[in-house]
Image (cartoon, rainbow, N blue to C red; front, side):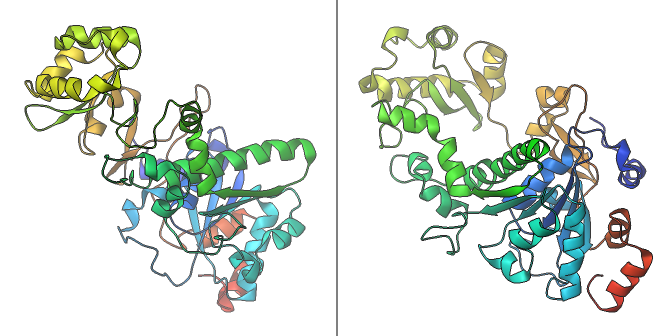
Length: 398
């Protein structure tokens, strides 16, 4: 997919009716944060929502400073800078809320209430508003006000314990809590609440907790555990690296391939293409033999390079794929053919997902500088030029 030029992106931002994503016409206020909140906002904005990010006027330490154009989670939306400690700044956000369909915030419980931007204040201004709240522990409960990060949230759900080598759990990046169990569930919750509001005419609060999202992602594993088909011991199960036919193997050139031959017919093809002997498919779930078979398969796979195994297995029914690094993945022919990655402002990054047949999503613009669009947004959202000048004079915006 060829990335849109700078001029094309600016044009689309000025004429919002030209944005054709499935969420075109939806207006969202995002109170700037980190991790899952911005990820949720990115998902909505990539699919056409007009998301306005409310940034602080004075920047604070929000974690890893990677540079503006590399802050991919902030793409596709405009930014206004507002002083939330200034009553006129708070009123500015409330006026934006009056025009919005949804709001996203990711502070600890009680912070927006103290700012005067809590659910009560916002829903009073706009009864149809969907108020999306993103936290690790949820809005209530004994740990609600404790600090934490992805690794802590998934630790409480059983997910972290289930992942990693046999000697200790290993964090799966911050994909399970922040993004899988956090931002995606908040985006799903907001979209569901927006649909409901079209029928009821009433907004509501969406309380998205990463602990509950991560636990939800584990639903199938909990089912297998209850049935006796999942052990609490890592590398002792079909899907956690315990079985020989579902795992990662090193090749002769120091690279890796993935194999997932769970079903019988796929396992049959694995045996055929690797010449793995004495491993009848009907006995593949004999756990006593897994270690020996894993050693045999590892020796076979290491006899060829990754490219050579691609020639043998890629496109077969083995359920096989090469393990690509972050530099290789955007160049793989399958990803290129589907436009899975795009280049924006010189930065290669994943494109919008999922794909839509009639109203495709698109990266609307690179990550903005804080306050880059303050005047433009306030004008678009109904503020008069006199209102804007007054807010600037009292230091409420920049």
